[in-house]
Length: 355
Image (cartoon, rainbow, N blue to C red; front, top):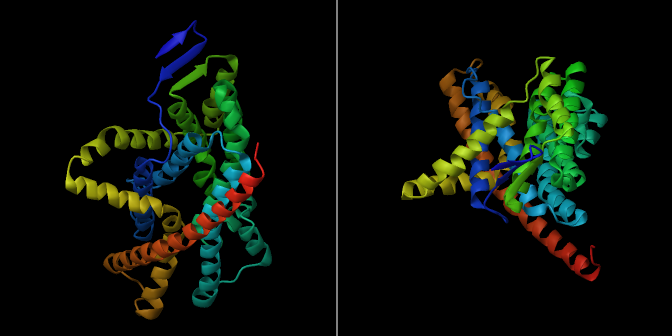
């Protein structure tokens, strides 16, 4: 680590690239955090554990992985790979909940809500639409926006003072806009987490290139103003991403090497990697089953008007089991589709060079 002429901060890293099991395991930890957080909501537990940190981890890890593997990828190839991974899964789950909610819960949605969800823009219309069909689906609008942002901003990673300024303005502007519009749900779930993805991009770039170089310029100072002081004037703090980064580093540097030394630890890592590979499906499916459908079954099928904690826990365990079974089958189906699509498009790319 060095500061040259007080104008540049630089630190070296071991170079990395490609897909690594560590990130699947970290996604597994993230989804466990989120499931426990939502289970606590059903059981009215105090949020001492802060399992919502798992969402911060997802955004952080996404930024890291994209910079590690896609920083030089052609935009068309990048978008095809991302879209065929995300959209088929999302659209199948969305359609399933639209039909299930109408049939079982008697919930029906306006054409506008349905169109916005199928176009993946529902989170742009505020809390009422973002969480209307299934609460976790706001994530799809967010992550697709980040994919577009990644393509637009990846070239700026070579000038990190400029990158921090742009992303600082975006993060500050986004969270203050949601704050003044009174969209507290989206502000807490998305707005406050905007720096997580951008921080992940920087980390992934540093790991891929083997060094992190930050120019110490007035632009960096302005960026820090947008990230730190300006949101603070409204009592807003971008802090959860720092905690998420701490969890990621602690696991990767200390806990994971220790777990790999024993058979039991290796089983735990494989289990986390399994959950991580199915984390998108689990994220989108589990909460309505644990909450709305758990209560519906308890009250209407089992005849329990006010289920106690033990009965709710039974429903949660059953909901998680169903979620995992459905997620495995859906993941297998959509992965085959994604593989065939990418193979077909790759043939076209070979015939017509991308560059």
